[in-house]
Length: 107
Image (tube, rainbow, N blue to C red; front, side, top):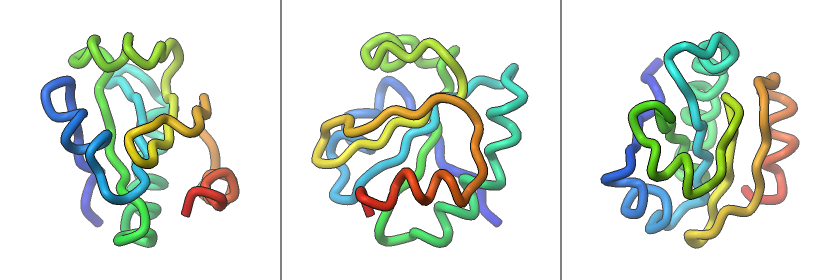
């Protein structure tokens, strides 16, 4: 199982805003236990929805510009982008089933 790719301040516009597919961004931090808990869930989601949804992570400590631009205060925060616009924001770890339910209208 492959890990979820990371994006940063430098490539956020190209990878997320410019994506043809809807993008689920996890704003995460190394020191955040619930974020680590979400890693296998996101890897599985990325594999299952390959071609329909792009899943990426952004480390908030290393990328303050993007984190501040989207006013992210809690980790993990999941943000869904489509056509370059943030559609939805969800805070906190959740089971894959619930995450899929929350993404149903985006996919």
